[in-house]
Amino acid sequence: MSEAEHRPLKLTLPALLFQNGLPDLPTSLIEPHRNHAGVWRIKFNYDTAEPLSMSADQASTMIPLLQELGEAELADEIGIAVNSATRYASM
Image (cartoon, rainbow, N blue to C red; front, side):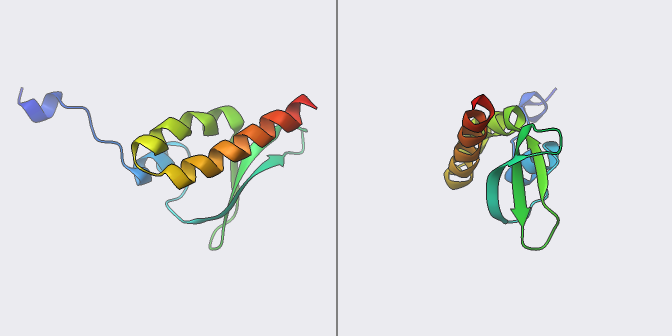
C-alpha cells in the first residue's frame, strides 16, 4: 500500500455538515429550540432552505471538529446554543 492509502481522509466542512445531516449553506441563526415533545434541540436556520435541528449532544460533538477545521465562529455559535439548551433543559 502507498503512503496515501494509509493516511486518514482529511475532514472538510462540507463533509462534516453532510455527516450531520446539514446542508453546506450559511446559517442565518443557530439557536436552542424546544420540539413538540418538549426536548431541547439545536435549530439551524437558513435564508434559502428550511430550518433543521439536531440533538444538543450531536451538535456538541461537532464543536471540536469545527475548531480543528478553523471554523471557530461557527463552533462558538453552536456552543452557545448547546449551553443554552442544556441550561433550559435543567430548569
